[in-house]
Each structure stands twice: as C-alpha cells, then as structure tokens.
Image (cartoon, rainbow, N blue to C red; front, side, top):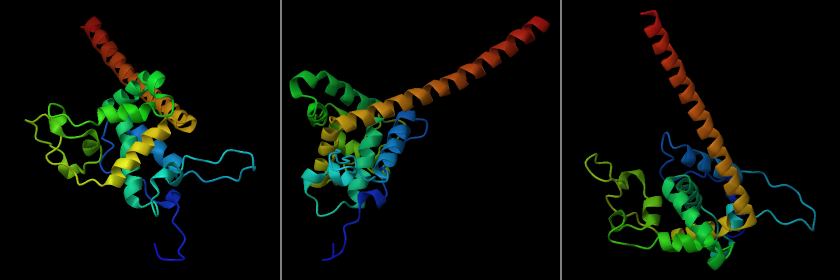
Length: 216
C-alpha cells in the first residue's frame, strides 16, 4: 500500500470462493450467499456504548495483523464459508459442539478444526483439509474411475492458514453463532421447498399412473 493511501475496506472487495459452490449443493450455495451478504453489509452509525460491528473481515482478522485485506483473504474466507455448507464442514461444526465443554464457547470450533485438519496418510490421500478447501478447480481429481480428492496440493501461505483459523474462532463468538444459525435456517427452508417440489411432482406422476390404470 502506497504511503498516504487509504486502506480499501474489505466491504468493497469481491468475496468469491476459489472453487464452488457446486451445482445442486444447497448448503454450499446458502453459506456463500450469506457470507457475501454479511461482508457487503453497509456499516451503520452507532451510539458510543453500542458494541462495534465485528463481522467485517478486517475486524475478524485483526489479530492476524495484515497490512491490508486483499482479494486473496476474501477468497480464502469465502471458500471457508462454502466448506461450512458441505457435509464435511458440518461434521467439523458438530465436533465443535461436542468440544464446547472442554475447549470453551470461543475456541471450540478452532479446536475441532485443528483435529480435522491434521494430516493423515490414510485420509483424503494424505492431503490436509485446508488444502482441499482452498484448492483451485484444476487441482481437483475429476477422473470418474478415482475416488476424487486432489491431484496435487495448492501452494498455501502461512496467512492462508491463519485466516482460516481466525474464521473458526469468529464462528465461536455470539455474532458468528447468530450467522451460523441464520445459514442453517435458510438451508432448511430451501431444502424443504425443494422436497415439496419433488414430492408434489411425484404425487402428480403417481396420480396420473393410477388414473391411467383405472381407465384401462
């Protein structure tokens, strides 16, 4: 950043995941949409004794002590949000809930992530969870005869690791929990709507078959 130049607020940067959300995956789509909505929300004036808004990415990452928030940090954060919407991300959240008593409200999800992100040769082809989370599309193994996963690991920085860690920590705050609950409610709503559409179609199809049989 040039001396004297104002730092660009993360609100005005793009918040696009590195890859995804995938078509047909309602959870991934909802979490990404809700994250973008949260990050692009306009700041409001507050009274002196009101708590400061902490959901903006520059506030969430204040302890990382970055000179400025760049598109890379925004993409990493959006990819993290997308990961929360898949089954694996949900399992980390579930583990965090189970660790609440031992790790505490604030650190429970970070503790769950530390366990989940440990490298194991017998899991995910030996790749870390964060490598899968932040892998570009061309790093994914799309061979139909394979078990998926990665063809190669992405080149990640220490900052990438710290950004994801602090996002998990933020999820353990009151504001993070409120955002998570909002995402879950929207996922449930869209899944229920999709089920009703499919169920209604099936009922109509079955009714047509029954009518046809009765008239034959």
